[in-house]
Image 1 (cartoon, rainbow, N blue to C red):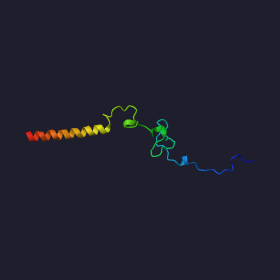
Image 2: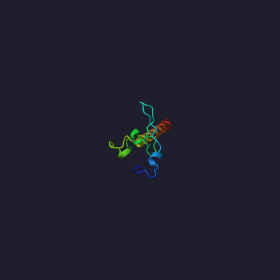
Image 3: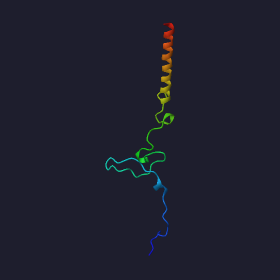
Image 4: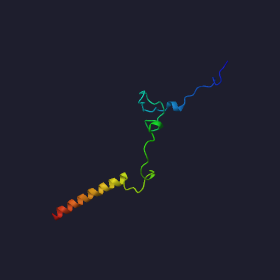
Amino acid sequence: MSMPGASRKMTVNDMNLAPRCTATSKRTGQRCKAPAVKGKKVCRFHGAYAGAPRGEKHGRYVHGMRTIEMKEERKELSALLSECTATVALISG
């Protein structure tokens, strides 16, 4: 008496070879057994796609005055203005 499918050779599923999620359970302390997202250390359930998109892709983007790039640009302009003010004070001094 043969079982159905017994003659088929077992193949290795590529998903079984994938690196595993490094997240651990607070309750049991065991690691998650789900496959990690490619290029990440955690699975899709534990935050591999976490975070909102930056810039104009963000849903609440309005004008860009408070983006990281604008803040850096204002800091540079402020430093330049301080330097100019100090130079003028030295000259007129």
